[in-house]
Image (cartoon, rainbow, N blue to C red; front, side, top):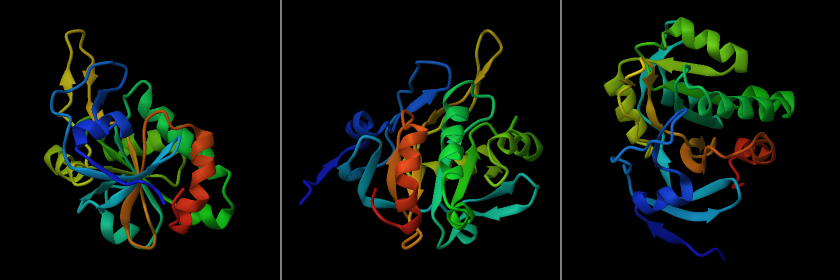
Amino acid sequence: MRNKKTVLAAAFAAVAALTLSACGSGDASADKSVADVSVESETKAATVLDQPFTKPDLVLTDTHGKTYDLRERTKGKPTLIYFGYTNCPDVCPLTMSNIALAKRALPEADRDRLQVVFVTTDPERDTPASLGSWLKAQDPAFTGLTGDFPTIQAGARQIGIGIDPPKKEKDGTVVSMHGAQVIAFSPKTDKGYVLYGEDTTADDYTQDLPKIIKGEKP
């Protein structure tokens, strides 16, 4: 029997990285917490949530310029959701690359079932075309979503992810502060029940994805 513990998001940040981080920077935002979270169990890579998140009520624009209703389009499908931006120099491309590598190791039927959704935190620069081009290099089947920032920010908060508006630094670079976790949603319940931090490796995803696809706990 696993011990269950309930923690505030500020404390949970130490466990599951529910913090804002700037890609390529060690900075962190003062507004880190967004939700109270219950943790059922934690493995090396995965944090299984005792109180799963409801899938965000998000209607955005996909890389083909068409309306994409997240709940409707991913209903009953194993789904990974990540918020990031294409100009991120490190965490975002590495995260998507690790998922892409793990996905390629799956049987074809499972690859077809798995939905991977990347929601931009920098919609002004991440147009449908630019987002589509960036994701195509990772995996052509990945779904990219963009839209207005307030809608994206509100959707992220629904699953405990904090994001700040992109900010231009003194050297002219634009930095997007965002939570760096991947949330896995069960095909059985459509609830976000597993969380992965930015240190999750391709091998970790390779080990866990077969269970995620079945709606099982990793």
